[in-house]
Amino acid sequence: MSNHRDNQDQTDLHELNLQEDDLTDSEIPEEDGEPETSEETGVQVQEEDQNEDSYENICVVCRRPESKVSKMFKLQDHMCICSDCAARTLEPFLGSEKVDLEKIFAGIPANASMIQVMIPPGMEEVPRRQKLKKKSAEGKKNKTLAQRLAEIMPPHEIKERLDQYVVGQEQAKKVMSVAVYNHYKRIEADCEDGVEIEKSNMLMIGPTGSGKTYLVQTLARLLDVPLALTDATSLTEAGYIGDDIESVVSKLLAAADNDVERAERGIIFIDEIDKIAKKRNANQRDVSGEAVQQGLLKLLEGSDVEVPVGANSKNAMVPLTTVNTRNILFICGGAFPDLEDIIKERLNKSSSIGFQADLKDKYDKDRNLLQKVTVEDIRNFGMIPEFLGRMPIIVTLESLTKDMFVRILNEPRNAILKQYKKLLLLDNVDLQFDQGALEAIAEQAMERDTGARALRAIIEDRMLDIMYQIPRDHNIGRVIITKEYIEGTGGPQIVMRGM
Image (cartoon, rainbow, N blue to C red):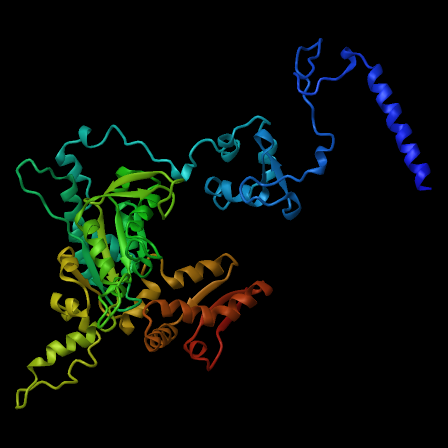
């Protein structure tokens, strides 16, 4: 068998050699020469892979093959990108919006460059939330100083407007009205005579629920100026995890609808300012305490700050703009819970042995002890002197009494009871509260010791069953809330229609 196979192989080789000798030179295909050219088109015919589908596409970003990803999009020069990398690439442009990637890549031509792919169709321009408004040509130039000053609301009128929304806190409203009036006079005044008026930033100190934030919100609404509400607890020194100090200015710019000129006349309220007090006996770097106070110094005094437009953090995809904080009014507020002990310690230093000595528990039941605060007390609390020097106005708020709680329920323009009466009036039901119910609500609010916030929590709890049952029975015409119902010893008075 082996001899027969060898003879057959030699016969096939001999026939192959004879066929090669019979070929002419013109019939021998060129191996190393130029490729053939088509006579009709004049275009060179290039050899293509016969089995192009047998090769797997690979993402140019993450280098994963097509079998490892769910979807692959083809780009220029046979490049491909997976759906995950495409989504991450387009995220700075699309934000939180959900967009169909297939529709985006379907509208991109085959010869599109990578730059064209990065910016999807319809997104070539900067998003609206990152656009800056142009500065108005008209303004101060067309008005005299007297006309501009006449447009500022005087202090007595500001306080009258605040009285419609805020109950009590007479001294605080008076101080804030004068401070705001002087601040905006300072903005309009010129410095031709060499006298430059300094900023009058404010520091508000008051127990929780006394109305610090509500006062500032009402003040900004009355003056029609942009307001940025921020929390000092999230602020950290630059380079650490958290919000940078400049983020408070970017929030004001967003509140002003990216109008730099309007933002530079706005108000920034930094709440929980007592949380950035200097830590005592801290062995490590205080990145969220004293460092934040030092970082706020340049903002409080006035400086040019580069802030991102439409975002809280700076990155290459977000445009930056410069905002001058010289005319921005900064109001800082906090409860300062341990400040009362510092005040008591200072006041009790005069205690001594003798007939005229003060008792050490003399100030234990004083609910308005914060009104006796001094700059030295705040410094002992942990605020650095440089920070307090840029807060020349200190406003203290009173603790709410029972009478103030009752007035808060009824008197303000946006009172809580008026809101619930309007809710039931939409169901054609008249809601009423008797005087005993109001006093019972006030007493329970004082026991909770959370300020005016306790009022809504109490009413929400007692009104739950009523709000649930009224839509079921259209014969109910009036509901009277009694003291017994608030205390849980009785029920409300329900009057049917036609009675």
